[in-house]
Length: 119
Image (tube, rainbow, N blue to C red; front, side, top):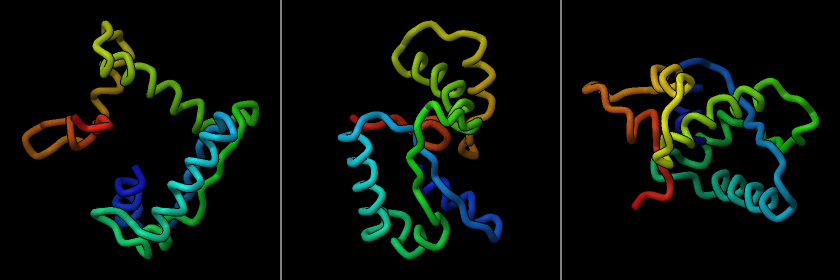
């Protein structure tokens, strides 16, 4: 997700911030360590300096902070999760599925939908 965010930000001349929802101290610390690792080592497709230049912070916020972006993420992730788990798709899935980034051939998986861990 960090790579994709960096690529999207590259289209403009701005930087961004990642806001994640608090879970528990252990998971929050793991997320902070993963973020630090990205800033130091980068990824297969983005150098660490490119990540640092484009994403200036990771903020972990409580659900009670009532952040609109986190509420929107909840609305989007539920239909995706149901679909990936093989549960029956609902109307919200069709709405979300239309928004995925696609390959030139119209493929979603691996482009707009990446399922981890990969088998």
